[in-house]
Length: 411
Image 1 (tube, rainbow, N blue to C red):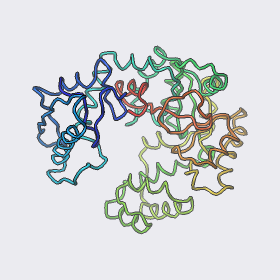
Image 2 (cartoon, rainbow, N blue to C red):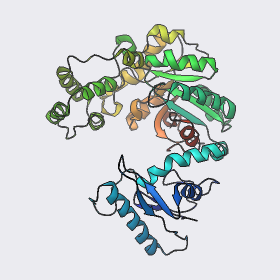
Image 3 (cartoon, one colour):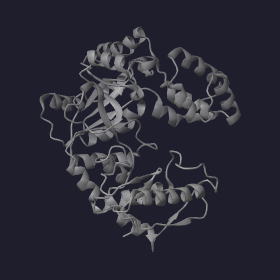
Image 4 (cartoon, rainbow, N blue to C red):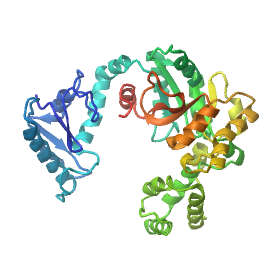
């Protein structure tokens, strides 16, 4: 046996710890021992860093009964050794900073596939008797390919019970959940949902909820974050860094800047957007980007079968809700419902917080205007959950990752 503890981001994961620290389920038939024996030979583990030559580390057996002080010394030594190798020998001291652990990353994919191929992951998923609300954004990109999404629909029909979000809300209120419910939700209301996701959902008769932004449908504007990200990535590093510094952002990488924009008020964010737009006057999205990211049209929304596709609100224009004043918040949350009901002539009583961002005032207003609302918190629906802050499970990924998330949402 190669070990009963795992080094993960500078802390030990105890055997039988119910996988709280990462991907490794020590209690499963295909767990740490099986993967370690597959990945290592003679107690050694080969870890590759980028395109560099793999480095071999020794994995010594660690007993559950070993004194904590002795074990601390062992895991610190192995962590420092791996961290030093990953940084070309430039250590930053212990504990190591919170970053993907090379050992963790090296074993995550083979572990998931071993668990999936052996049927262990499916058995674990079936053992979890909790409703899952799955969260998607685009079908046919890095999140989930078209083929993967189609496979997921077949899987859900075979092993769980696909239901609509409204039906799940009814069962939660009535106390009649079975734990087999699987709800599909799509955020952002983009054209890809009509051209790619909807035909597959229709073919497999799987219900779903599409959260849309009526203000963007009306104007034809893209989600501000999608367009801003593309414009930032079209800039050179120097230009991007300069425009960010001028706005008070210390970062220069596009994704770091995008995270920073989440903290801005709507007015400040618009000022920053305008400055980026001036630098990217020649920016033009590719046709395939338009097909994916342009908002749905009203005709497309109406064409989708209302008995299968439920329309919910994702606010009017997809702002960061906690940054808004009371008047704008009311327009985005309550006003978006009024606009959707007027345009579609149907009840719209489900809501999704853009980027999952909320605070007490936001949740209070959502609760006053909608029967249920979903967040981006990664968890299963549990008894006693507040219907105004329902958690979800990321729906993307390949087969092994998808099944893994059905029993560990944070995977």
